[in-house]
Image (tube, rainbow, N blue to C red; front, side):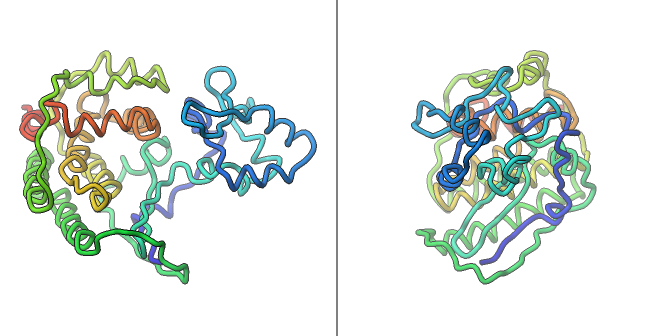
Length: 320
């Protein structure tokens, strides 16, 4: 198995109780099957405590019932995890062990990264001044069974490399790079599969009014948002590169390249609209990328909302 990560990935470290936010507050956590089987082997107070907070969500998933203020029931007054303390971090749910990391699997290749949803990770990516390079390592793990079209995968992989070159081309302003990236994605999309731009009427700022609210601070930012020019700051390169790295190759599963690139362009409009800082990106990501309900809605809007079609996004990023 080949594992790919951005070069900054190795530098991420959770700061636990010193974090200005908590990944253990605001959203439900699934209890995965492997963890549940392990919990059955426990006894004593920790077993009783785990059993007392297990429940099922509307989709039939086993979850931990949240306490007051949407806090995980194991999050103590020092913002540390009582389950981690009692049985070790390796036995906490898979979601908890992985956060804020994400994994995309493509058969013999596994790509991993960190998400803006973590304030520390967001700070790291927002502060980058140089191009993020991808680092590959190999191990003896066998490839995963898959039905990926190899020809499409390598087409996308080659195309993504060019997309990165566009993002980091400092001979032109960031806004021009975003336009060029959209044009390139439209060309790629035409080669892969027809794509009809959406006509659904929704105001641009309403796109960010997520039905599932995790942090009221995001709601306030959206309420007071206004579109400003996209500056030529390094953080905008990092934002576009993050979205292209995280989502571009997943078009191998749905043949939708253009929506993935639209996401990268909307990404640089987020700080332009709601606050040019890493905290704003953190809030958006936690609200959107880590709520399945909100993310499904957002993906639908990327393809179907008139305000997010290619020409409208070009106009938005070229605002002067």
